[in-house]
Image (cartoon, rainbow, N blue to C red; front, side, top):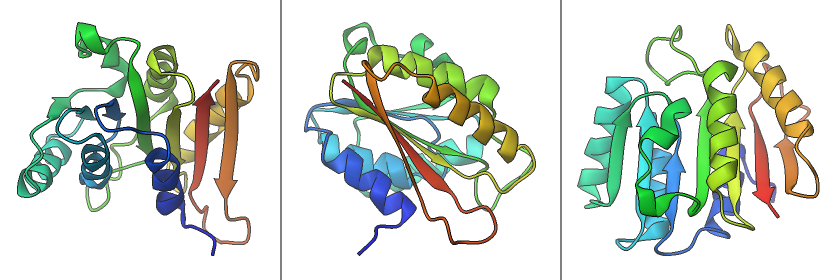
Length: 188
């Protein structure tokens, strides 16, 4: 059976993230990816959960507290500022990261991710990513501004050196209404 977009993104992370890893949820939203990452890294690992919206941080924090995950740092700031928050002993040791590009479901659709913050964040994460690990981008682009970000992200990842990174695009091509897709970047 074909995996849906989020299940496929999680499948890639599940097969690469290890207990004890340091990971990033670059757009924590409603907390589902943060919870998934926290479960993978266990109590000996650590999750950084970024979002620019207070609502997203609060929702994520509530969800993780219900599941008794205390190894999460919640950061209400742009993912473009990842370097400002990484603990010194986490630099260069990122075991994986995920982005959900677009807007926070059931909230203000004018507050969106943009290539101006997404591309610097991806670049920073690739610098800190361990070998054979993934940065995953789930690209939702069926909203105002979505096409511009999608095109900029695709241009960026297509230009990555194939000797350093393997880049995969996973999408359903017969769905209507701008279906989301996954970009997986694996560091060699």
